[in-house]
Length: 199
Image (tube, rainbow, N blue to C red; front, top):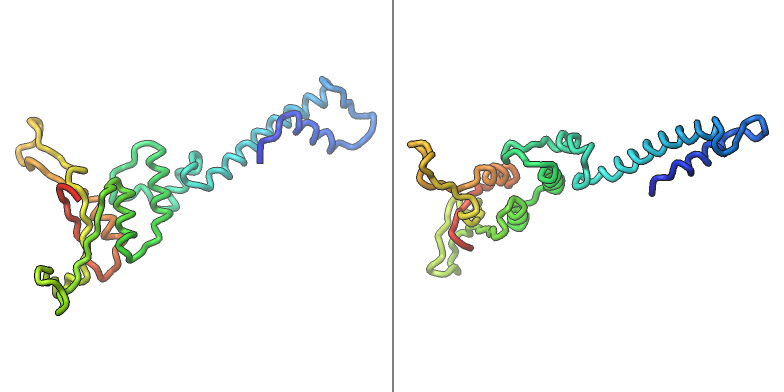
């Protein structure tokens, strides 16, 4: 649906007037100019309505972005504050699509969405009589644990000459990643995050 022109609005408003010679419908007349001014206002309202319909999609939201964030309880305490409207839109869309799932692929896609494209999920299976001799034993609570492996170089912080004396020489990790995984994991499971050199 497009936005109608001022002339189209003027003609629609003229058509609503009662018939007769009493009203001056001549172009440039006072009545026609008044209806053109009303048509300009109607066009602005129509343009705003069309733009609001487009904002029903959070990826296109601009004026309704604050409402979308309030609806999905954003900004998220697990993640750093978003930079710019585009990142805010992406966070709203990510939260909207996170319905929850217990499959490893769900968590892999979540981690990929957070900027770790090479993520891998390891599930710990208990040792059985048919297991290989080199297989891990993984008894007890390990059957309810899974590990998300990401490349450590994605988030490494090196100490510099300006660092505090108590700062580690090298640190890696993403506390927001563990926070989000812990929020969406099944209640009976334990989630671990492994930082590796390569996958």
